[in-house]
Length: 447
Image (cartoon, rainbow, N blue to C red; front, side, top):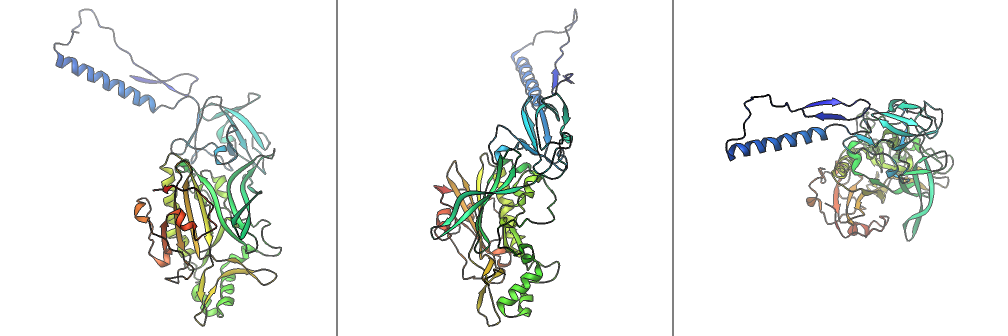
């Protein structure tokens, strides 16, 4: 048995050559049934081995690795037959390998930029073989050439839909990519409270293909503020350690006390970080990961919580999603307002800024919550974590009937106050208290 690369194809032909018996050879029929069985078994094993070998051979078509073959800056790799969401992009089928059938159309797009090879914002091409794609006029390009002059520009749209609770209604904004013809590819949505400058929740679809995500893709140098806060308010400045220290000093009545809460040491985790709702690593492509860096997609989160139980929860949810066969809806939100004792021992609500009327904005949430929901089975599970490393029993913290013992895939340290006191909940139970959780039909626990 010998593999041979067939000329002009992307597959390997396996040839079996059986020598013809020479005259007067010693070939003879098997002597008995035992010998016959041995020959039959040997033949079956040979067939199985040949089949296994053939499955390891790349089929005709194109294939690229998310972590090895994407040009820099990368283009969006869009399926023209897909939908205007995460399923509108080609996702990896095995590990981080994205495959394309021979002749399959692929739309390479560079919103806000142009493709290196054509000077246009988009290029429709067809898979030829390996990493070769051909445009309509017959010009062929290797996938490595199909990059952008600069990183694809991500943007937002007002969906016109509303969210929130009966007594408090907020707008929903979608974040993603807009092509030159106006087509918008929605990566995630946020429910934003403009009066208080807080995002109530984000929602996106987590696909099993997350197991092939682009690892180690660099973070952008900054977040995008957008036109969502009142004129003159600098959300970047509000998150700086100096500003949050000054804000907390004003709240608790003492700079010395504020310096105890917000540690100025570079290697300390006792400060308020920009805690992602839809996380960077929740997306396969690096270009998609960058689209999570909007201030509307973060909330003030103590770094002690952000880097510990919350980070573990995000990681475990991605791992769990990658082991499934169907996608999940992931809702991540905030609730309440965190408090700390002032110089008199009285608990005071925390915030990072003031509006022109001296009203507190960008509240520090008391709670971060997350819901995983399978629309097919209508099963769901909720998680809630305390955003306060200083109080063992925060007055606004919501507890539930803990079901963590039914989730063998979750590896956090839920009783550690500094890391974030946390619980696993039935969705319907948590939604009775956190009214911002969208209404879902939940028939069972997602385990």
